[in-house]
Image 1 (cartoon, rainbow, N blue to C red):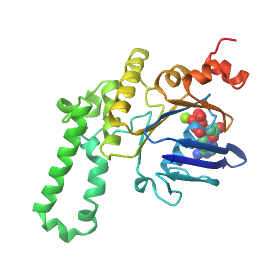
Image 2 (image 1 turned 120 degrees about the horizontal axis):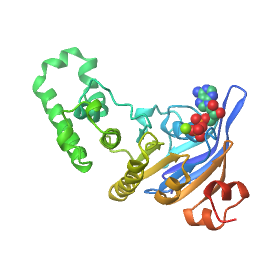
Image 3 (image 1 turned 90 degrees about the vertical axis):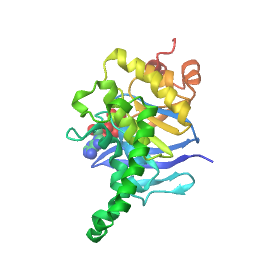
Image 4 (image 1 turned 60 degrees about the horizontal axis):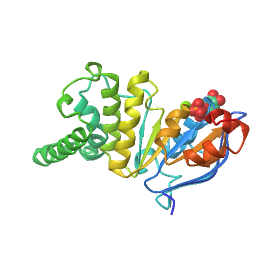
Length: 256
Ligand code: ADP
Ligand code: MG
C-alpha cells in the first residue's frame, strides 16, 4: 500500500490553475523527488500534503487513511523549509524542542491550575530534553544546543531545521528546496548527508527541488513536473535513459 496517495489533486489560485489533477503514489520508505522549473506547482503540491494549503478537488491519504480534514500538526508529517524557519531568539535546543513543547505542554497552557503540578511538568520537560538530545546526537548538534541560530553556519542551521522535523518522529518528511540557501560546496555535501539520513531513518521523504542534479543523485524515484502536471515518473535512470518527451530530456539533460 502507498504511504502517501494523491488522487486527482487540483488547485487554482484565482483564475490560475496551478495543479491539474495530480495522481501519485509514494511507497513507504521511498525518497521521492518532485522536480521541475520554477512556478510549476511543486511547493503548492507539497504544501497540500503538509496541510498548509487545501486542494480544490481530489483526495489525499497518508498511511492508508484520508487526511484531507486533518490540520497540519494532526498529520504524521513534518516539513523542512528552505528558509529554515528557526526562531532567532531561541537556542538551538529550544528550536528543536518546539514541536514537542507545543504538543506536550499544551495541557499546561490550557489549564493554568495544572501548573501547580510542577513535578509532572518537570518530568515532561525531561522527556523532551532527552528526545532533543537523541536527535541532536544523530545530527552532530549535541555541542551546539545552547547557541542561537545566528551563531551557526548555514549547514548547521539546516541540520537544526531537520532536527525540528525529526523530533516529531514523523511518518513522512516533506522538504521544500531545503538546500537552496547553501553555497554550492555545502549543498553538494548536504546531499550526501540527507541521503544518508534517509537510509538511516528508513522514513518516506518527499523532496522538492528545481535542481535536476539534486533530483537525479538523491532519489529512488523522480516526478518531473511542468505546468501543474507530472510529465514523467520513474527512477533517475529511467528518466535519463528513456525520457517521455523532449521537455523531460532537456530538463534532465539526457543525451539528445
Ligand atoms: P514552484 O514551487 O514549482 O516554484 P509554486 O507551487 O510555488 O511553484 O507556484 C505555482 C504557481 O502558483 C505560480 O505561478 C505561483 O505564482 C502561484 N502561486 C503559488 N502560491 C500562490 C498563492 N498563495 N496565491 C496566488 N498564486 C500562488
Ligand atoms: Mg517552490
